[in-house]
Length: 23
Image 1 (cartoon, one colour):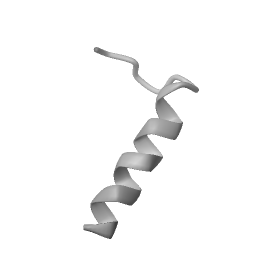
Image 2 (cartoon, rainbow, N blue to C red):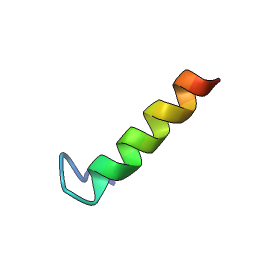
Image 3 (cartoon, helix red, strand yellow):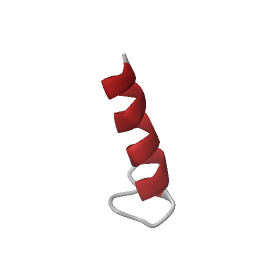
């Protein structure tokens, strides 16, 4: 799914990045 930089995608991206850094 190509969402690009949609407002709905940003929060998910931030959460994923946070999870990666926690790991």
